[in-house]
Length: 314
Image (cartoon, rainbow, N blue to C red; front, side, top):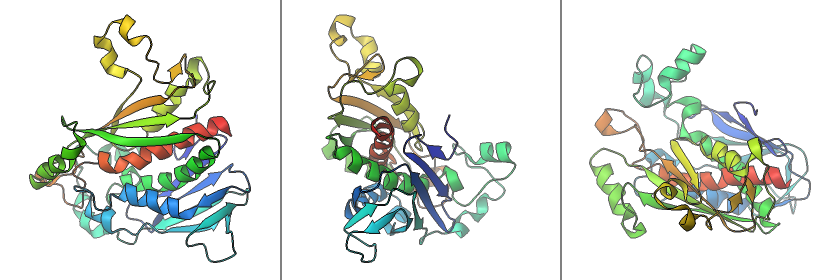
């Protein structure tokens, strides 16, 4: 089993840092030498995670610059400072940090002696005897920015093998019309509340034979990765839970891209359910919170999917 802060065996990603500490970051080991990384793509993915311009995204996310500082493992293609463009991997561990420039730990001082309902505050203290009250520390979704950096590197490796990953928000609350998502979220935000959502991910170009039978089924690894994402409360693939209401003759041809735990070469489709954040003004919780965390989880789902698949293909 992987350690609590590390994911993967061939491409091993370890994340570190707290929400309102000096920085968050990661170490990605196992990346081959000579891989060209588009740094601008990483910036774009981080902007997606931050929800730049998305209604209901937290104020902190929209103002945090999320600038990646590379500490090791990459070199600029033209020997210039590593600030944009093309990077090349050295085959050594890739270490990076993202400084928390918009951290405001003072906003959470009132939590030193109380627990927020629906958060990990109490269980962390019960388990470790201590907790980081500054916005939840490691339990904060701030940590997922590091996953996006590592996952975007993995996506670029997979793209060279013809494998594409694309996730999208397909439902907000009971609303399934994307054109109405923004107004739905805005209504909950105006009321000082929050709402959940469903993200669908589609994988194309994955060759047949990916995955193992019994305990190492492909869907088991995907579920493990998705359920590690903050606020994710459910995972399904293929017909999923809706299949229980249909006869076998109707759903048998629908594999969802996996049979017996092994990819069959067709499009792989899975979905994740994200709960409404319990951090809301209506619940009396102060801070800069999302009205719908699912909007910003889309690139995180893609990143974790890439980290799963790259460990099969490495």
